[in-house]
Image 1 (cartoon, rainbow over the protein chains, first blue to last red):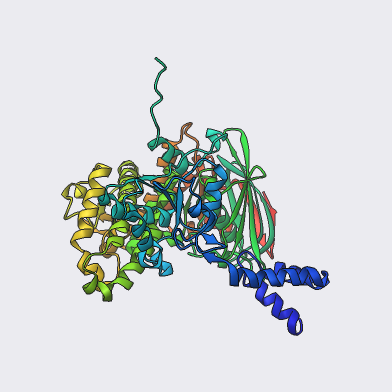
Image 2 (cartoon, each protein chain N blue to C red; image 1 turned 90 degrees about the vertical axis):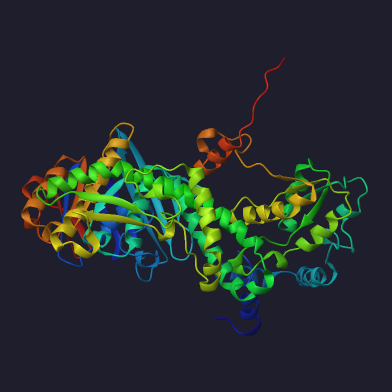
Length: 201
Length: 383
């Protein structure tokens, strides 16, 4: 145990995800040895992130203004919405540069163990966006685990009757990988999701 | 296959131990509490990623240590494979194959195949249905390692569903319908059907082996019958047939229909009421269930017959017919001479049999191969 502020800092850092007691101690002493200006910049950024960052009123992604950059970009296709769990998933899909539509961030996945039900996710907001008929396709890009699948199935059943095409991201083999290194579950999914290759005419 | 060497660090009572092993019988002799069983438990852990003695990993780590490490070198068809497993309490384990880390410890399943017979196995016959489901699921995973994933998915779905049933119960009257429960029902039906089909397939192949093994152990004892009792038997009567081989899709829709039928009850009670987690492996002799009617000796014979049948089955199904490693933990002192002789005969023919005993005299003559003395925290080969 250290005295006063040092121990407080270690305790606070230790509460962050992925930071254990040893790492917390290392970061605390790094900060203690750092220039005052650097530490002040970090502190003010922390305060700013809490005060200034908002969530986009349309898609729920993190935003600097009321509506995020993607939702206010007129060049993006408004007829396709990609549904993801977290803002970091938006960044992941954006990196592909393949998707030119818009997003909807749910803020998690259905998980009764954690007390998260459909009402705790931004599903009502999603349905509101679908009402005016501009959206023709909904791409479900929730995580490929049990909770993500449950959320996708739930949404598909909810949205299906509205006459909007609902698609789910394919799961299968990693590109550039070796078949022999794929685990059985992934390989099994890839088998059930196989597609026909048409012979050239 | 056989294990050429087993090393443990901070595992159970051992701070460090090195056990070089040879093909054929290997007998570990030592007084009670010297750590013989802990060493064979480590072998079982590498093979199944679970212990036959405890349900959680924490007791496997030596008191005061942060993590336990088990390393073993397995020789299968002249190729040596090194398996390393790091067990940390409360965190997921880490595994390496030939020095290279694997993304999930589950991927080492199948690298070492072990069939273990221990005094605890009497619980398969006399214990709760959970013990028999565990026996059956271990067999399912040994036959097809992929099923380990299906099993852990099922556990998670059941926990999610139970949480939902508990929280939805009081609010149900206002809600009318429960679309999220439909979603978990669908997942439970698909996963549950896959596991049930795999269990029934394992049971079909095990049955002839178990019958033969029991007949050899107790020639006048009648016929050991294995049946599967399913929470779906009423909805799908064909499941009750001894050689049931239902279509997975049919089973899935039957499970889904049954979930719909019991929904009100499930909501009232807040628990999962149907699914493979409520099924049982029925063992009977002369038409009477072993659980209530078996004598002590019949219980031992049945438990031993199930393990020997597993050994035969895994050997039969292996592409090149290689034996699993047979582990006999402290069992000879418990068996009468006829059962001892039969077990010794099978074990002496196995590619490798690791046997533990408190005194060397407990071990039958056919198994007097390599012998190791375990005392005072050291392992010494004495013969």
